[in-house]
Length: 414
RNA sequence: GCGGGCGUAGCCAAGUGGUUAAGGCACCGGAUUGUGAUUCCGGCAUUCGGGGGUUCAAGUCCCCUCGUCCGCCCCA
Image (cartoon, protein in one colour):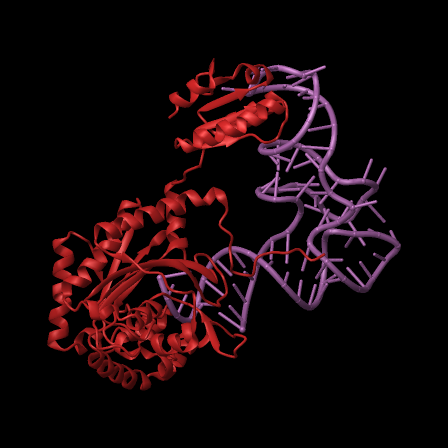
């Protein structure tokens, strides 16, 4: 029979890895709460139309990476490739924006149909933040600061924040024209990938990894020069804010985010320890998206961080936590086993983490498992103890033991 | 979608065309029918990702296929 296994690029998270995940999620929750950011959860399945309109038909994410299929009602459905479009959709649908600006976060699985490689899977997880209805440059700074502080608190080392401004939609359209005109003159000097992008998504050529293309771009018109004075001033205020918060950053004039909806501030937080997919967190401002999805014009900024990539960094830091019980209950014989079942439940009700050995094997075997479970205490009930209403409490670390009444045990561990 | 590396047990692996596929970890059982370490003994791949071919003989060579990893594209 064919071996059953998970679909390509879909990975299981096994019990041993969950400690890092849980710690990460708890830390994120804590940071959001302290920053007065509320959680929102949206379905992982949406109408294909949402992403086509929100992210942009021309992007790779929409053009070739979506998990799309027809449901039984012949509607085109897509497993969400990112979170922002869904959050904005939900905010519009439920009139959240009529109640004032929204500070939201989300977390969960995203899906992209790509070849897996280091730091890239078909199902992966993101934790993201969206500030809807905030235009001030300080909101950009605050959004970035929350991401930065979260990563720092988790103990991630050697992070770099890269920053750029794409300007307003007008600035970008103007620059796009300049760049395309300039590159058309030199089309034959571009690598094939970039030639392709010239028509589809020319700004992304700036980000090319091809060295000759990069050399050519040295003399190309710059995005910074195309920014209107207001855009430039806005960008300066973002930088001043980051400096005031002592968050180090590097200006990267080639940083162009892939999704169509970005404008003004764009940023990435990267780690050199991740291989080719180095971005841990990426985001930026998207002032036109809400309107594009049918809401009132609403400025917004957000980011998403890749949980698997973050976990890779945390694993390198050596972060991991096993889930050991406080007490391991060992019993043998009908009467004793019955009492152990009751006792374990009572201990749990008083808040203890208790593992009950259900094997019925010899005491030696059970104690061996007690030892390996990492529990501090073992409670032993044999037939003799059961008849007397007693238990033996062993301290597994100090290798000491003492008999006591079951009731005494309960009051001691309450 | 394109390029390259790799598939031997739950994990790490030896194996260079020649009888029954090393070893280690983990796990299970026993020595110890009521006590954890260590030790000792035993168990744990009818077969090398799958299919086809070459050969007297294939884990080993060839072809196809699937999976996986790394890179490109792209992104978190």
